[in-house]
Image (cartoon, rainbow, N blue to C red; front, top):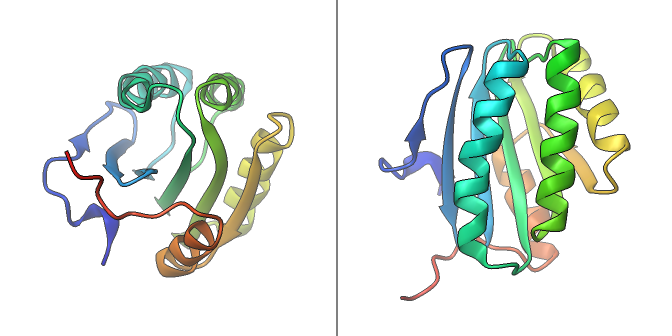
Length: 147
């Protein structure tokens, strides 16, 4: 099952766009377009709202990147700070899917560079299912928690 089949997960940014969904202990973001510092800062605030609901419990990040999912230099720094904040608030590891990007090598290199200085393990995949399998093998799944 694709994580973004959840119709209630949509948030949009003026520069590029993204959606955020939470299923089980996985926070997923689907993003496309070129993002500048302002867009990443807004995204970071939206992520804070979502992450605070975990109350410090560990969770995993799944990033689904599409099209020209690139960052300006200033956006790289803003994203690095956001990832560092998330690490302090339960983010245990990250899986990124770059198979639908138009400049895949550049996207991979850019996101590896961003994560390199955060202390968060990141693995890059071609497919969403491959990423979900890897997360599940590490104890993170998309089975919704019962209320």
